[in-house]
Amino acid sequence: MIDHLGEIDSTNAELVRRAEQGAAAGSVLVADLQRAGRGRLGREWVAPAGSSLLCSVLLDAPAHVGPQWLLGATALSLADALGDTTGERPQLKWPNDVLFGDLKVAGLLAEFLSSPPRVVVGLGVNLTSVDPAYPAATSVLAATRRRLEAEDLLSAFLDAFGRRLDLLDTPEGGDVLRHEYRGALSTLGQRVRVEQVGGVLSGVAVGVDDDGALVVDTGAATLAFHAGDVVHLRREDH
Image (cartoon, rainbow, N blue to C red; front, top):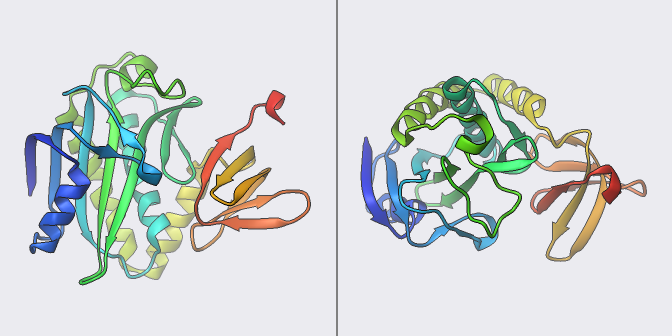
């Protein structure tokens, strides 16, 4: 079921509230405007009304993959949808960004409910404009010269997402998803800076482990990061 609202504080926050009141898995909430949209680490997501695809999906927690892999399935599905609708497939950046070139066009956010175990996955896609406060962002229009309608992109995303959710039902499907995500991740092989509350480390991103953590070779040690902001470093930043 898809519920389309004109304005809401946050599609994720509203769908969490509905989940706590018994909303069914598979519920989809879409809004034209978020008054209090959020990204990772509580960052504000600002977008003019009608300029973005803003939606959240309620799911039962998958049995065979962890939370990062559910975000991976979401990111892959969104990349499919953008590729199908624009003719240009974006890349993925660990842990939850979708990029055209080096610029972010979409972000994802998952929130987990414990009883029963369920997940609200939200996504925000810049369709026609970006917040000028974020120079590392782009829009679908700017990156591809294609003006997409939110409902068309949503339909393509939900079709792709439904196919990938079937992979989460079995351990073998989870392995397929992990392989596909690693292959689509532009972060791997790059020199990166990982920013965490406790400090900053740099190194080469060499893999993603089976828990979804980013594995970085710092030169002194090989470390796995389950969370953090990752910056892809240019040669002059090394």
